[in-house]
Length: 622
Ligand code: ADP
Ligand code: MG
Image (cartoon, rainbow, N blue to C red; front, side, top):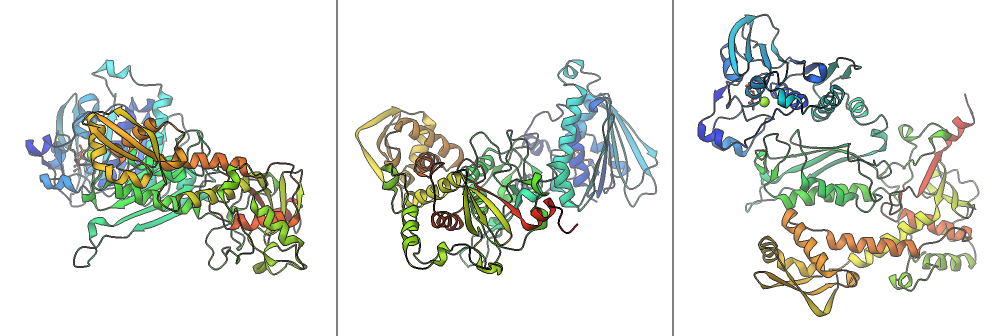
């Protein structure tokens, strides 16, 4: 059991200063963190009056020794760090030694605790900053913290609280959020006028279901990626550079109108970090409809020395020592997972099948079943043979042409196969099956090994064309277009700084930008694709991104937006009659296209019904 000691004034001064007790939920957060740091396996929270009348947190952690109770409630006293260098690698949730003292100055606080080695427990009371005790008190091993009459001595601050219900909702949110990062701990919340919330330990699916939504797990992709450690000169892993990202990200089709279900934890600490937010947003950019927000629960673990949590008193913000590497790792991991979601065949996955027809939602096939992923078939299909066709407004992209040509030949190209006789051998059927018909000029009906699918042919083709265009454009460094008349614009000191620092990287983004004077930048060239846009705006936004994140996806984002528009115009329109061969060619192209399950706007490109779902709908075998 660690002992509590006062921090030296010098160390205390190095800690990000500020008030942490803003409202009841911030107290709950601090108390939960203390209980987690104490190694509790079960934490019970009781609340009355929205947390203003009472907050009680009971844990079965290591407890506090009687003779340390007074220190626990003293300012700048903590058991979690002792030396200045401890601040460089914080492994606990707390370290400031201020929470209990702050609470004790604005509420009636009592702390009752017992450590395993003590015969009996002890309690201490604090009111308006003055403590009395400790006195003997009965208590099992662990700690109970009671906070009553919040802001009783500062009525002005009480006025800033919202209604009981709102405060309670925030407390509820804090408990749920923290519980995600500590699956081994059981949490309970009992609040007056509310159904109790129970989150048993070690049942992660139940927890995710209660914290997010019951169907979240079935709609999410599992993430578990490790960053390759950098090796030092002697070839050993440099342990400081190891990183792991794990958790769940919902498919783009399961997005929300608000960013209210986004949970990111760094070494078990919930953070709201701009760099992280940017990396996640960038990973979803291609697949999410504008204005929708992704849903995710992600855990980043890395060496505590590689992240600074002493940035803000509420510890919601962090600073990464190698921000760019963290950004790229998060982006890369998520991007791969989201893009790898292409159709495959495989055993039906019961948990993913919705209930019969009322469940006619997008059901993505399981990803990555070894050996079943669609393979491009040798040259049987030319996809788009050039972006020029789209530029030229040719509305019959080449796969249609290729498919029609193939169809006039003798026999059947297996890649364009008609529905074969006796397609019972599931391994022969490609993931998206063989087309049977076109419905209402909009949908393609296809029989698959598992059941049937309906494809929105415009959405699907749009995706295929878009990915094709992107491959062509981003294959090499972006081509530059020199400006006839260079653009001069004034820059701030910080913009000039950024420009000096990142100048050498700009050409790879298609930009030629230099400093003419300390306050003027000159733009000589822009990416060809964006030549018609506002060059100055692009350059400025780019500098802002580079200054903040050390990286910018601005050029790529704008280029992609343009490509998406072109893809939309270049893809098949409704009511165009397709031959079976053309439909099959589209299905095969989808199988080879990343993110084929959704169009560029994040809408599904096809829905699937399994035979089981159909059987259930017709009550067969029941
Ligand atoms: P910090 O968590 O930053 O150290 P706090 O004011 O929250 O500061 O707590 C002060 C000290 O009291 C902690 O360092 C810890 O030793 C002790 N403490 C607080 N809550 C608990 C608890 N629930 N169980 C065991 N020890 C606790
Ligand atoms: Mg604390």
